[in-house]
Length: 340
Ligand SMILES: O=C(O)CCC(=O)C(=O)O
Ligand SMILES: [Fe+2]
Image (cartoon, rainbow, N blue to C red; front, side, top):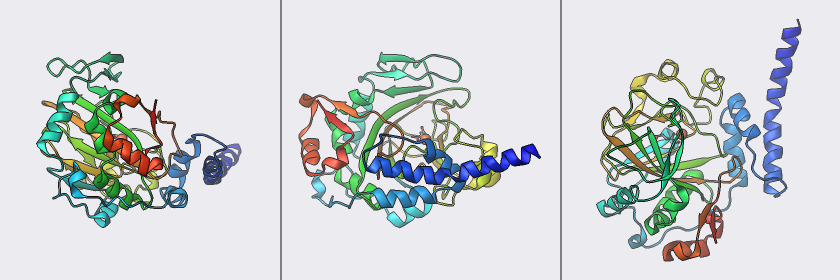
């Protein structure tokens, strides 16, 4: 009897979380509260994606015109993203999205820019303020420091690239906000690592967002391809049986039961490939069996409501011309960048 009452109360408490989420978003919009993601995750677990989708549309800003001359984009002219397909499937893969000059420059700076070895499931600890040693990697994942990364003009140019912004805006249906930049190496290991995002999971840090992954090494089945479960990003994409496991890492077998392995999209592709993806859907990086993998990533969001993500700190003397101009024209797109 007592346990039935308890469970009824628990259900009731969970069902009030969407109201909590709405209140949190209102307070955030009124600038009365800063970041909060307490109810963002639970509401998704209880009700699926619809509340986030609706709230995102409600708080998103009016769209801007990012149509500028082709010559100012680092994304090659041939790149066409079909927004309807992207919305329907949750991903889009384009090989040769950037020139070899661009990918070579990014590959090279990944080995000269400071970052850190991530702490691993194995217990191997975090080690910061180091450069990646491709010949002798020490952990499964090396993260380039985002602030150091952003000092490079090519990174700034990609972050404010009009073609990228347009794709993000078309997908989100609202003005995109640059949320963060990231670059990381995955290296050879005998088994997947939870800390390195090598188990299936969904991200839930914002109401809605979209990620751009750029491969900066050739990625084969063996060198740790990114994997996505098509359509699992949809408002009703993840069944309750999977959401009820919580905001957590999932085993392949648990995912396979709901979305058969044959349907998983395994992104192999040459250096310069770009994946546009809604990581509300299930995804992971397969662990590397042979070789290594370097990814550069940009995330855009409709609103900064959600998790506290540090602003990108950039010293004035590193601010390149393209970003300076973009910040002048569209300040709210770059509100996560702090120039000091
Ligand atoms: O390394 C990967 O392919 C997965 C990364 C990931 O989970 C993410 O960027 O959200
Ligand atoms: Fe993720």
